[in-house]
Image 1 (cartoon, rainbow, N blue to C red):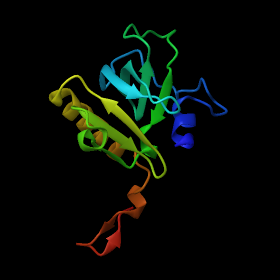
Image 2: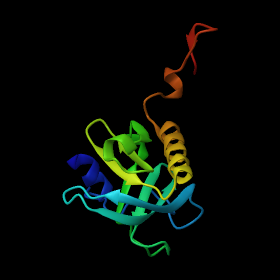
Image 3: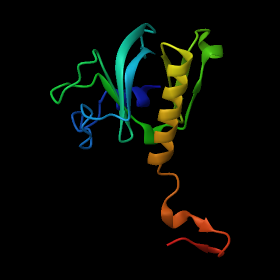
Image 4: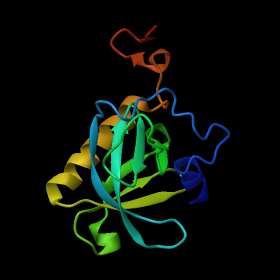
Amino acid sequence: MGSLWRAALGMSENSTNYDGVEFWSNPERSGWLTKQGEYIKTWRRRWFVLKQGKLFWFKDSAVTRASRPRGVIPVATCLTVKGAEDILNKPNAFELSTRSDTMYFIADSEKEKEDWINSIGRSIVQHSRSVTDSEIVDYDNNSAKR
C-alpha cells in the first residue's frame, strides 16, 4: 500500500508539481468524502477535487490557488473503483485500487457514492495509458489505426 500512499501524499521528487492542474477552478467533481488513513486506520472527512486525471484532497472546502492538497492520486495509476460496503461493513463505502494498493472512502449518501464511482471511473478510462491510438486495431479494415 505504500506506493499509492507515497504518490497520494506527494512524496515524490516533484511534491508541489500538480502537472499544471488548476485544482481550485472548475473541477470535474468535488465534495466531501471520508477516507481511511494508511497507517492509523482512522476515518477523516476531507474535501475531494477531481480534475484532469488527478484526485486531490484538502482539509476544508475553501480551495484556492494558495491551497496545498493533503494528497493527490493520479487516476491513471488506478485500475478499479467500486463499491466496498461488504468489505468495510459501512454504507456508501467504495474503494480505489491500483495493482498493489487499495484506498477506502465513504460518501454521505448512496447517490454521492455512485456519482463519485462514475466520475472517477470515467477519469480512469480517459487518462489510462493502457491503450494508445496507434495500438487500436480496426478489425473491419484489418489494420492498425494511424
